[in-house]
Length: 114
Image (cartoon, rainbow, N blue to C red):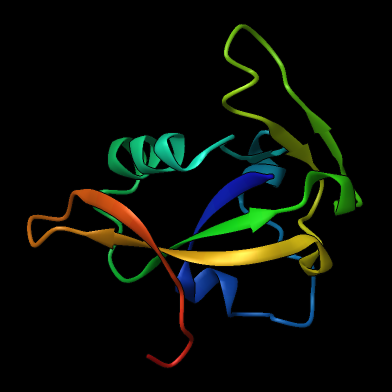
């Protein structure tokens, strides 16, 4: 399993289409993380100032229709998906729970509408 961090508003904007993060246009791939601890570290380092709910979409790597590459020295921790994320590959969706100060604290199962 791999994880992709996405703001809730982006994830729910076009629910019938594969999700294509902006990095596909700018870098050619979607950034992912290999485990929950890495998700929290990335959320803290790169999304702390992002308003609203952050999700960590857990993906079955084998069910993705786009190629997954684990590149470079730390590629195991930071896999890249070279194409849109097909929603059929989603196993679970987690909410990145933040402290009152905005720090990424832990992951909790996301409950839409809760």
